[in-house]
Amino acid sequence: MQIAQQLLGKVLVSNINGKICRGIIVETEAYKAPEDKACHAHLNRFTKRTETMFREGGCAYIYLVYGIHNLLNIVTGHKGMAHAVLIRALEPVEGLEIMIARRAKPQKRYQVSNGPGSLTKAMGISKSLNGTTILSKREPIWIEDAASLARDHIVSTTRIGIDYAEEWKDIPWRFYIKDNKWVSKK
DNA sequence: ATAATGATTCGCT
DNA sequence: GCGAATCATTATG
Image: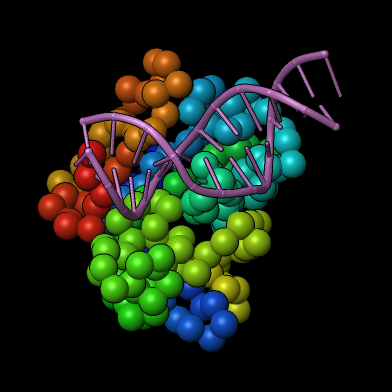
């Protein structure tokens, strides 16, 4: 939870095939097993997919939804605790042309990273990077530190796309930077 | 072995 | 605003 807010304003960097892309994290969501029904590891359900989430914090949990989109999470719990933060949106700061080129229809000039599925495509992240550590510049993806944001710049609200999670769908575990135009809407 | 479905996005009405 | 696309993972026989 706290970590989800602390990640706002930090910089996500990818180095894929020597191509560097940077983006400020502007939107996140927190997922916390075992009690959170929206979490894949609800009730500590341990499968081949969720195995990554049970690791020590600092690695990436990446998986495919709808057969189409890769979603990127940062594992934040200690070993055996399946806590993770979904990265939902980025504000590009470097490599924007590379990101545009990676999108399906570059000529249409879509926003390049305003949703969890879009940003992984823009950054060149795929599930083959699942489990990668994100604390070192030697890795293909990592997080660069930045000053924490003032509390009044952080907005908290309900998470998106988890209507099946019953009472958990109303919990305000989605966070974004106030007035940032790169935040996905809805 | 087979069947159901989702932490979404894009394109068309 | 609505629905299709599309497949790895999960649940079930």
